[in-house]
Image 1 (spheres, one colour):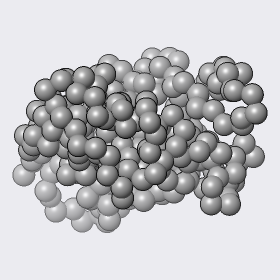
Image 2: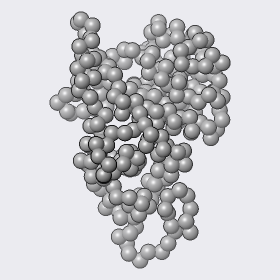
Image 3: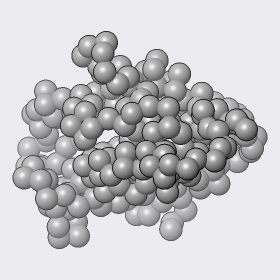
Image 4: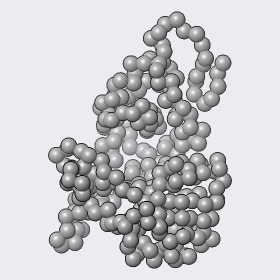
Length: 268
C-alpha cells in the first residue's frame, strides 16, 4: 500500500539487504515537501557550478537526513547508505561527504570577511561579515518554513527567544570563545510555540554576545507570518541594548506591520 509524498510501499521482502533501521528519517523529508520547501530551495538557493550532479534540493535533503540521523560531521553520511532501504525510501542515492563539503563551501566568501575586517573600529578584534547571496537564500527558506509551519495552527501570538550557543571547533581558523575553548558562537531567534528557528546568524567565537543584536532580532520578527498580531520577546542581558529596547517599544518598528504589538524584553 502506497501513502504519503515519498515513494514508500509496505511490502514483504525476504532480502535483508533491502531493509533499514532508519525508516523514520524520511518523515523529515515528507514534512519538507508537504510544506513546499523544495520549491523555495530551488528558487533561492542556487550555487551549482554545472547542471550535472546533485541539485541544491537533493543536497539540502541529504543534509537534513544527516542531521536527523544524529550526524556529527559530513563524513558520517557514509554510514547512511549502509542501510540500503533508506535509499529506496528516499528514491535517490546519497551524495558523498566531499560533495556536501563542496556544496557548503559555496556559501563562504573570503572577500566579505576581508571587508568586514577592514571596517572594524580601531582597537577591536571582532566583526560580523555580511551574508553571501547563498546564505540569504537559505534565510528565505527558513522564513518560508516559519510561515508555512505556523499556518497549520493559525496562532495570533508569537513568543520569540533570542539566544546564543557555542559550537566547539578544532580548526586552525577558529577563534577563542567566552567559555575558554575555540569555535563559533552563533545566535538565533527561536519561536517557542512552533518549535522553530526563524532567524540565525553565524558568528566567530570572539564576537561578543551583545554585538549588533538588533539586526538579527529584526529578521526574526520579519520572518513571522502575518497571522501573528502580538509578540512577546525574551532574551538575556546580551539584548539589554538601548537601540534594541527602543525598537521593541516603537509601535512603528521597521519591517513589522504596525498592527502588531510587542511586549518589552523579558529576562530569562
